[in-house]
Structures are given as structure tokens and as C-alpha cells.
Length: 110
Image (cartoon, rainbow, N blue to C red; front, side, top):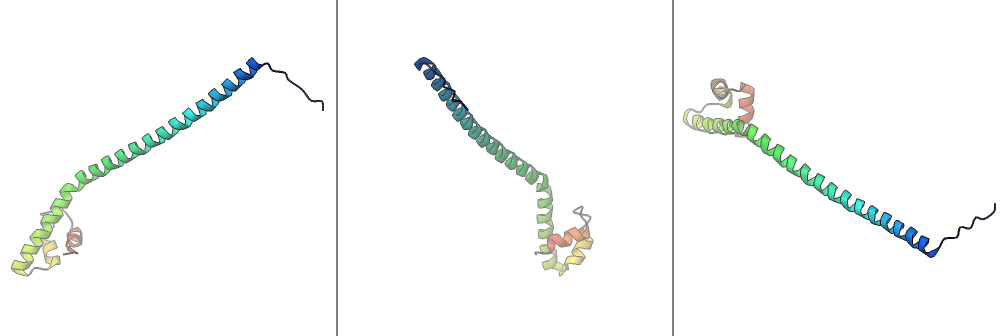
């Protein structure tokens, strides 16, 4: 195969080098923006995760309050009348709008 020799003037060589440098700069800039966008994505992901967890806390706050109140009521009833967890669940399930099984689960740790 014969060799092909291309002659390029100095000015054309400078133009080619400038174009190559501008391509390198564009690639560096693209990489920088890609990193920035990834950081932005991660921060938005964190914010949404926090917002959703706060929403879950707000949604379940009433249930937690009812659970705490049921535990306190059980402690007072148990000390006053020596009532068992099962008896308490039978009597007070309707008051807290939960099943007896749920009320027994709430009282399991107490």
C-alpha cells in the first residue's frame, strides 16, 4: 500500500490543535456538568426521602398517640384492678378503634 502524505500548513495545524483543545474543553465541561447534575440528583433524592419520611411520621402520629394512651391506660388499670392484657384488649379495643389482636400487640412489650 502506498503511503499517503498530507501536507498541512502551520496555520492549518494551529486551527486543528485549537479545535482539538476546544473538544477537550467541551468534554471536561460536560464531565463537570455531569458530576454537578449527579450531585443535584442525589440532593433531590435526599430531600424527597426526608419529605416522605416526614409525611409518614405525620400520617402515623395519631396511631402512635393512641398506642401510647392505650399503654398508659393499661398500666393504670393493671395497677388498680390487676387486669390482664387479654381482658384489657376485650374491653378497650372499641375505644381505640383497633382489633383485640392489635391492642395485645401494642401491650406485648409492657
